[in-house]
Length: 111
Length: 112
Image (cartoon, rainbow over all chains, first blue to last red; front, side, top):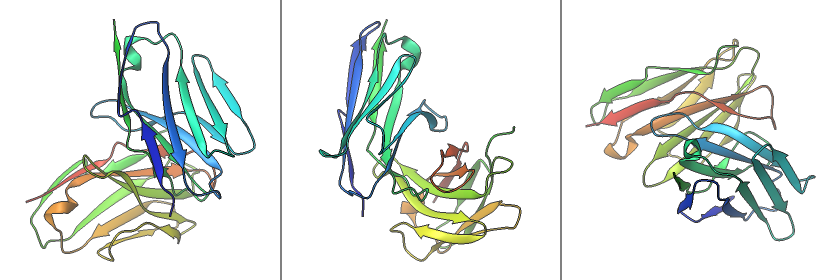
């Protein structure tokens, strides 16, 4: 089955700096890569996603890049704010709504 | 539109008992997926239903089962509960296969 690895497990940045979280996947059939943000005690919230026919996608301060050849994708958050502090999960799917998640990255934005 | 809802939100059960959790998807969504979240194992896929049919199943024992009704509401059942089944059970709905999934608030199950 699919195996998704995520790094780093924890990340601290100063407010205003950028944060980058990286994931790799094993199944070449995976074609959908969402990112979720989970605040303490809350549900995972979809923040951005990318499909295998696209190399990069941006939404305001958030961007995701995908390298299909290397089987890795990354989340980039620019101009970080304290409210960006949360656990971020990457995931991969073959397109059948069976998401395989990374182990999560705890992002702390220091004011 | 109302979001994904799950009931109950909290549940305490004893080893050996069984439990049924319920998930109501976003109106119009026909796909429901279930996930287990634990500190040790993270978020793990249990199974996915679309139009009342289970299309995918994760690597969980047969004690974990589910079903989906004609109105797209879904239930999952865990029989013969074990201590290790203590977890947050999340369901997610999607308008169709290969579309974005939106999560419910989860059911926190504690097995004692």
